[in-house]
Amino acid sequence: SGTPLRTDALVIGAGPVGLFQVFQLGLLGLHAEVVDSLPGPGGQCTELYPDKPIYDIPALPLCTGRELAERLLQQAAPFQPRFHTGQQVTQLEAVVQPDGTPAYSVHTDAGLHFSARTVFIAAGVGSFQPRHLTLEGAAAFEGRGLHYRRPDATAWAGRDVLVMGDDDAALEAAIACAAAGPQRAGSVTLMHRREAFRAAPETVAQMRALCEQGAMRFVAGQPVGLEGDAEGRLSAVQVALPDGSTTALPARLMLVLLGLSPKLGPIADWGLALERKQLRVDTEKFETALPGVYAVGDINTYPGKRKLIVSGFHEATLAAYAAAARLSPEGRVLLQYTTTSPLLQQRLGVL
Ligand code: FAD
Image 1 (cartoon, rainbow, N blue to C red):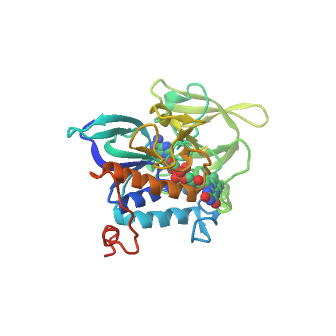
Image 2: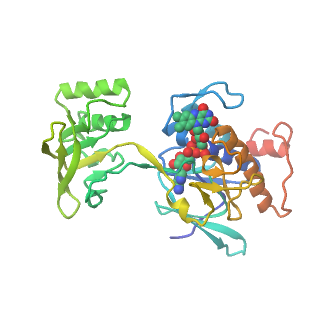
């Protein structure tokens, strides 16, 4: 698919370890491109605990998940990494570049193609993917009447919408569909198996207020079947109600927002040594079974491994040195301090 984007390093995963990897690579003069399946950087920190406190980051007695991600981004900013979010890396294969140097050809499911001299797999517990409906025949509606991510307003304007879920993303989507204006949905139903929500209390209150005003409604129930035509156009959803009866709710658009679950996914197919869904690495370079492909953070395993952010930072540091040595004509890299090295300070843009 066209000319690949050439880069010194491709980082798979923009969690805390992937972000620090970008920083360490930058210090050693290597540019990184970063891919993550989530819509933004931060990995587990922003996806699973954005507002919870972290107490064990060195020299940062307290910060939230979101703050940690923000600080790491700020620290990596001098190296101008490019982020390609909302897409999963699906393929990785060893190739030889036209000039004879080895590289990895990497593809994403959004059609991006990289030619990377080194690859850093910082994929954590896997790529976060929306939980899907397990209903038979659901796949036929996907992307037309059935969505697992919130589409833009043109998809719901004037239509009967059924939103399934109980977290902030689900309630906020239902609220957006019901909001007054030209983009307002024809009707909005929020559905969850019971009337209890994980969303923030303010969001729940806003949803309840809209229900009272008649702008939307809540139905306790679970989908048992989808009705529509052969083109993937949805017309109704069969719903099992708590009293055991079944009813058909009209729906042109069904938004299934059941949260995200991590999937190791394609990484398992790249010919790397896996041990209980973890990539086996050495503790000198944090290199996988493929030369020039490193694995750092929660995704790797080695004797004594602890899945902690601080361990990932150490791993990323040594992996960056290993990659820089691999790419340097002399095959080695000297240690320099950021405090005193004019070269490092120049790279940091502070000199
Ligand atoms: P992740 O944060 O998991 O990021 C990996 C990223 O890679 C994800 O964004 C994912 O979408 C992406 N990805 C994976 N595969 C692909 C692919 N094929 N294509 C594109 N993108 C992909 N640790 C501590 O040290 N201290 C704490 O106090 C602490 N508290 C925690 C609290 C909770 C509730 C949880 C769940 C974890 C906590 N942890 C804590 C653990 C810490 O969050 C993890 O160790 C850390 O996030 C690992 O970072 P990572 O960068 O390796 O992976």
